[in-house]
Length: 400
View: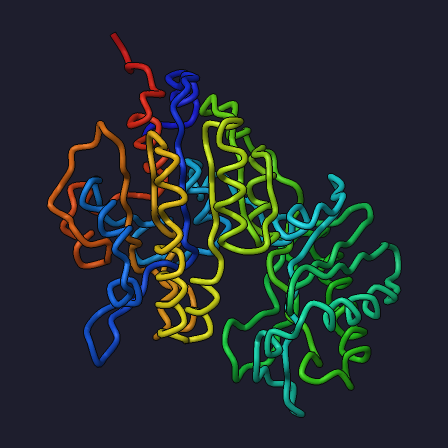
């Protein structure tokens, strides 16, 4: 894998345009009755047509066998080594809602959840309570006082919110309290270094006080914390690839991720709005990242059929994208979220790259099985951006 310093030397600015469409959690597993994944089950004539004109394959976000979080998976799609460069979930959520995060702040992503009388988690997402309800709960939690630090609790969307600790001597090397499955109790926060121990004690104090605040609030009668983090030092995407870049998304975290790497962000309310925004911005930028959230949501909810319908919805709208005639189109996911597992998984993700310069293969259907026979083979997701740049004729020759 070529490093970013060399990519920056090779990159050049040209009028050609790249559109990267990311269907979150796109990859799936075969349904036991049909042997087909969600993507293979969906009626996707537009993606299939594009696949027949493209070069296809499968990608691994991190490494074979490793189940990725959304943050590192997206960093890999943007060309960053996800092991070297990390952006914590708390920072991503905070930036996504335009929270004014300071250098010394520690931010953490939180979920409202449901626990039973013994403190065991019965629903990690509290039934995806509406934002109007979670906002009121966040206002109540924001009244919690901790010794030696200030606290901000801000609603994000549905059951999700952000907690930010403001103070001196805080560290972010802490574990999550989310046990990642129902039937277990939330974990205690633990810190190894001195500053981490201080933050861990504050986080545990916050959780205990929050438990009292939420005790009569069903189904959101407890919370889970994930991704304690501080602002990272990361090179800007636009400077590395010499691109004017626009990120178009509905969900705050992905806007936050894009903002963290220096993209201009545009918040939308639906897939239709996202593609209309692409059309409006098309002349102003040369790289567009478009994020589709609900494919992942339905996978996490274990809803095979609803995930199929969401894929079909995106496919029906695809002509709004292809009709702009981008020089390069990339369609893939950040990770797999099979409905059978109701969560992220390690399975590789279908990938197509369209341009007039690609060597077209014999793939005629955009799905896991067909893409596995594509000419791209199984490649690390971090290599997708250099391929997109090359197909857009935005890379100079390496060496003499």
